[in-house]
Image 1 (tube, rainbow, N blue to C red):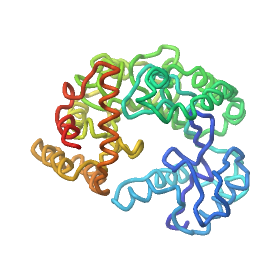
Image 2 (cartoon, one colour):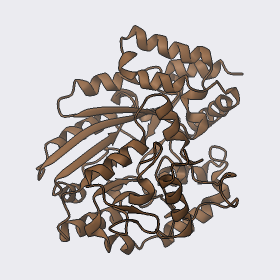
Image 3 (spheres, rainbow, N blue to C red):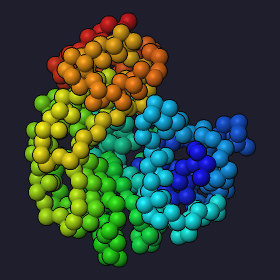
Image 4 (spheres, helix red, strand yellow):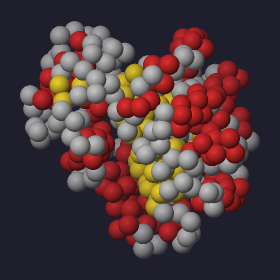
Length: 393
């Protein structure tokens, strides 16, 4: 295969909370550049459509990176694992089904899915967006200054959300699913997620690679009764900082309760293999102390793995644009606490971009407005980040 080949256009479908389909969750959503014939967005609703065929041709002909694949390119340039490489692994692990331009593969349908059925969620996380959290959407209605861009497309999103209740398109292909990721919103609350899981059980397709990303706020019995019947389950609990400080970044979260729930999940009656991991995203708020969660996870016997990754969007929430002297401070603190080497991928990514003070000013304003609206203040949870924002004029 060409060196920058990616199996995603042949195997995978990502469905956003808008109900719109994309190549994957890392791809820029989505514009052509001069290599493509016009200036419109990709139309990936039709698996056999013209745009899909054009992308597949590009991959098979080895023409290099697509314009929208910048995040994978950046990670590979840093020597880190990319989603492109993961999709190629999925293809290999499923017997390398023959690939073609028209309908992707020998099954004629996607065999890998990343599904965000809606934005129904019980938390309002600082680095999230209203499109992915119903709580943030409510906050945006109450406080438009915090989310000024939301007003421009909130009505369009509401229409898309209310009209996208039919999931027959995937229920009909349930027997072909080999990899399934369900996110949100919060998947344990989504009726569509339960409907799909039940359908997979009914057709006997439980030997799939099932990955659930949850905020861990509750061990929903109905939901977990379903997923424990699958034979290879990975539960990723999103918890972005030490449980004692979690209430700031993840609005509405009780860190101690989530930590207890992770143990409860590990003690359920699982049909076969299961893995429980903690995942955290690194933003300016937690960059000076994020490694504390990793240390706690490594000391906790019922957690199999811990993952950390950098947020790139929203841009103002990305550590790559922090002032250079504060980037260096984060590195110095990590070294002092002997965790720099374990998290070096985070610091390499952080140093991959130049500072952008205008974006940091935007973060400062967003933080101040949100702190006031929620009556939770950055200085009480992440004082070094507070000092950094105060230093920005």
